[in-house]
Length: 282
Image (cartoon, rainbow, N blue to C red):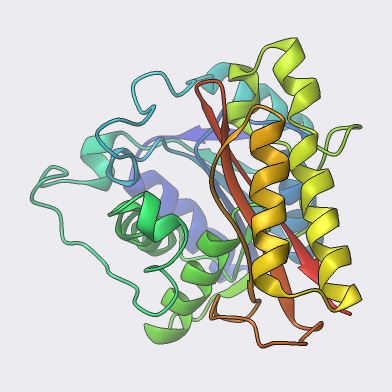
């Protein structure tokens, strides 16, 4: 596996693959890789002849009071893990490479329609940062297919909308959420949790399951969401939202609807903010 920092070197490699008519898959990440990331790499290998994984901690998607400074940077360990997963290239650009005019003067991308609700309310500007960096990374690599996990569901919808709206010839593949044995969705932020908090964090997935069961029973959506918040807060969480929405665009679910929905939670345990979701297909 090659570790590449320069766009010129990356493009030379990709151009060589193109000349050989090889299909290129990409897995964009912020590093500190875990089993969930590696499952994406394996999926990318199944869908392409060459695999590029990027590691870039993107400053523009972090708010002023969020954890950009302490977000773990583990490039050496990430490189070892990716090599073990048969990744071809690890692209690890500097901030100056991704944002040549600086982050404050950078051209930004706003994706409307799926970004104003839920995370968009609690993390203003977050999805502009996500869309901006994803577009830049996709332009640098120019893959045929890119894989993203379903855990960041609103992010996944945002990226799909971005690619469709800007006519990018890239297939976006959604990979299933990888979970710990207790149901906790795998995340780099899980390492901020103490052992006790990691055990308690399993409540998030249980609450999502209760929300799904309530929908399938035909319970009122307002009651389902209120019960979920109560359940989490009673377990020591501080909940931003627990919502049932249309899976396609996060618009409001209809009374009595039990298919094509998704339950989503964002909550805090101690100083760590965790998100998760669960499809509701009836």
